[in-house]
Length: 393
Image (cartoon, rainbow, N blue to C red; front, side, top):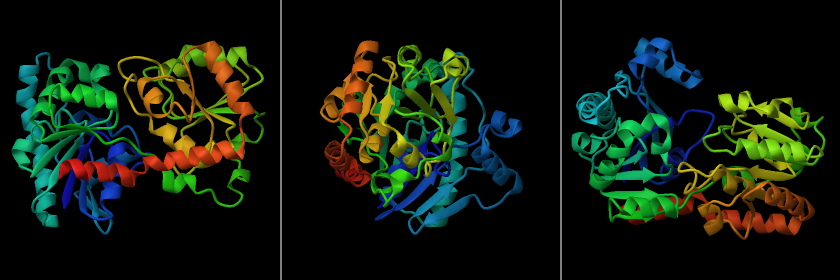
C-alpha cells in the first residue's frame, strides 16, 4: 500500500509525534511519503523560528532537491511553494476562499512528489492539519482520506476562530477518523460514524531495552543534584501543566529535587519555580538523550492541568516512562483512569500528589519495574499500526 502523511509536525526534527511514529512503522512494509508543513510567507521573511524551519527555507531559496529518502520505503517532502498567512481573516466564509488557494499550492507540491515516486493509489492520513489540508481530498483524490485525531488543537487560541467550525466539517467528509483516546473517539463519532480508537504508542524499542550499566550513565548535569529526583520531560506550558501545583509541591517538599526538562512558555519562565533551590530547569534535550535522564529519575511526574485541551488526551510520555520501568505519578485524567490506573499513581491535588510520590518512592523495586515494562509493551507502534490498517481496510 502507499501512504501519504500531512501533519502539523515535521518528521526531521529532534522530537517525534504520533504521525511520525506511524509513518516510520508503516514504512517497514509499505511505501510512505511524509509531507512536512509548508512554509508561509511570514515565516519565510522572518527566516524561520528553529533550525529545521531554517533548513526548509534554504531548500526553497536554493532550489535544491526537496524530496529526501530516509529509508527504503520512506520519503520526506519539503514543500517549496509558499502559502499565505490568512488566519487573521475575520470571517470563516472568507477564510475558506483563500484557504482553498493555499490548499491548491500545497497540493501541487504533493502531486509532483507522487508523480516522481510513481505512487498510484494511495491513502492520505491527515494529522490535525485542519486548514492547509482541508481540501486535499477533493484536489488529490486519494483512495481513502483518513483524519487522525490525537489532540484537542481547537482548544488553542490560534485554531479556535476557524477551526471549531472547520474541524467537524473535515471529520464529516473523511472516509474515517482514527483516534488515540476514547474521549476523542466519542467526540469524532458525533460527526462521522466511521470513527475508531487505535490507541497510542511510545518509544518502547529504543527506550525499554536497557543496556548493561545504562542506569550508571547519569547525565553530567544531574551529578550535583541531590536525590530523590522527581522528574518531568516535555513541553513546560501552562496550557497543559498545572504550574500552581508544581510551585506548591516544590515549596512543600524542599527535600525533593524537581528536575524539569523541556522548553518553557512565558508563564514558566516568569514563575517562582526559578527561585527555588530544589527546582532544576535543564532545558530541551534531544530524543536520544531523554532515556538516560528518565533512567536517573526516582519518580516520573506528569502534573497535567485539567482543561478542554488535556481532559481526553493520551500522553505518550506515560508509556515511555513505564517502558523504562519508572514509577509514575500523574493527574487523574480520563485516559489515565481508563488506561493506566493499575500501573501508575494517580492524584488530583497537592495532598494526593505528595502522598503518591511518597508511596512511589517507597515502592521503588525491580518487581514493580518489570511489571511496568511488560505493561508498556501493549503500546508498541506495531500494534497501533495494526489497528490503523484494520480500520483503513
